[in-house]
Image 1 (cartoon, rainbow, N blue to C red):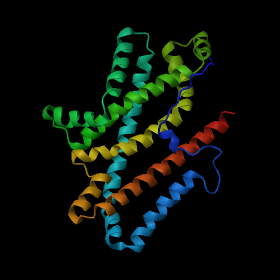
Image 2: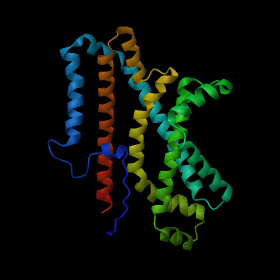
Image 3: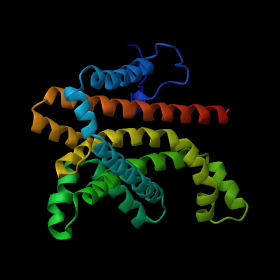
Image 4: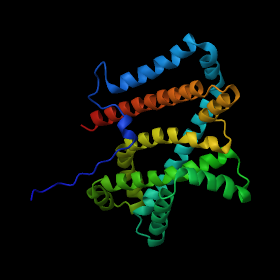
Length: 261
């Protein structure tokens, strides 16, 4: 019998990120991005009714989408840092709490968490839609960030910690001043991927009566019965935003790759 090697296959939003060597004129990313952008410009010009009206109806929804995404990712990074450090902590209680948090939150779909925080806990906490959405998305993505931070910290050679301790630093000082700066360099690309994923998942907050991009599209469609046109424009806007962000993450990865040589 022949031996088969087991390879880990990982499919994430990183597949959106253009590769370092993908600079051809007709790369997949360029075709996708420029095609979506061209449609987003051409449709309102060729058919102002309804495409131009739909575009005019969306700006505040795009702003809310960015607000939710930015606030959530910033809070998620802080939560993820604490969870990542907690998972490698030598204090059993802290280690167990951080690990349980990561396992439990990752095991519950984001949509369920949104419903639970807004409707179930909202009964006691009186949370507004935007606040509930940011809390749910922050805690959900904080668990994934925790795994990223944990893996990043453990990817730093152990000799770095040993050298810092030999210089007289405490473990806490070594972690903050030696290990974490190197960890940030390692985890920046995965965090960029999570930002893109969070931007797309932010469409779920429309169920909480938050006027994000998707909800604005739904409102126009319900009022005009132009469902095909409305959701076409919503999809194009999301596609342009995510592909643009993927390009930024790709540039960041290129710079990290060059600096790491």
